[in-house]
Image (tube, rainbow, N blue to C red; front, side, top):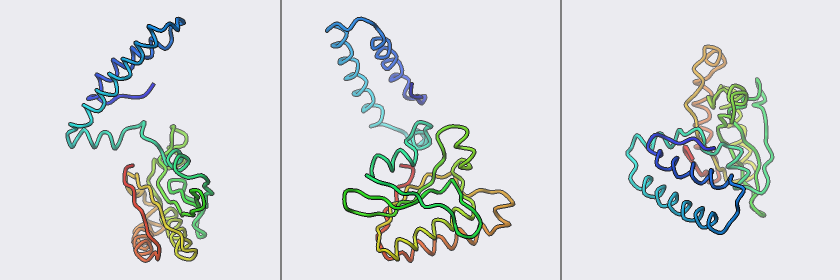
Length: 196
């Protein structure tokens, strides 16, 4: 079952009733009608709540744990995605993913943060906090986009750069600055999506 935010509690009550009815063995027309009524009520309440969000509630939605993750977004939007790994200098940073993608016959280069979907992948992906090798991987991908004239689609959803001493030892600040400069110099269009 999905997780509800504090201001979404009225939705939880309706969703609970829907789930209870769905688990009944009885598949009569009355239950089907009741499910339809409850779903309509849920949709109406959802629209009502989201039309009047406060700025803090919007922040909570942006940080919601059930928001779609990078892999889900890419697999939904693109027909094909081939991941490219490594920065060709130190290692591969799992918090930054990127590669070549296709929608029908159009080719793109996709880059984004991946926070992970469970505790194991979150730890592996450093909770979405990029290290220097992640920024260098992004530069490598931007350069490929320029070289092969591919539009770039980025999905940015990060708490920020990894603040560890080892990241600074490997040139974190230089890697960030260079990746910004590299993104500015890309010769193709870049589409940015923040906290999708």
